[in-house]
Amino acid sequence: MRKTIQIPVTFDRAARKKDKSVTMAFTSNLEVTTGDFMLMDELLQSEGWLLFSTNELQETDIPAEQAQSREGKTKGQRFRSIHFLIWQKLRIDEPFDAWYDRQFERVMDKLKERLD
Image 1: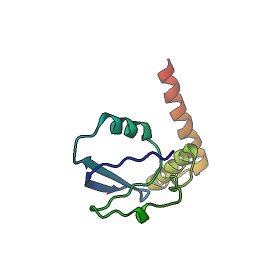
Image 2: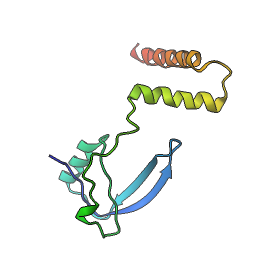
Image 3: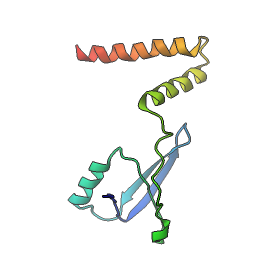
């Protein structure tokens, strides 16, 4: 069953991220029912379509195909990719693989410390 949120909103802002994706913010124009809010909560971190129109949305505007996922990368691939961008930006004079291995171990050590 397709779950859809449909509420009147005001499009507040958009901000481009480094990877050229966009973060958007909307504010509901009316109070949101508990049921609608529960559905929003249930759909957090889900991927899908966002359609916004100035009151002119047509049934034909709704895409029939699945929304593309975030570059199709796994969480591990995304973790490595962001480290590569940092390595490039800081112009680190060390081969990426060696630097990445050290960074990965630093993160793991910090996480292990939190278990103590």
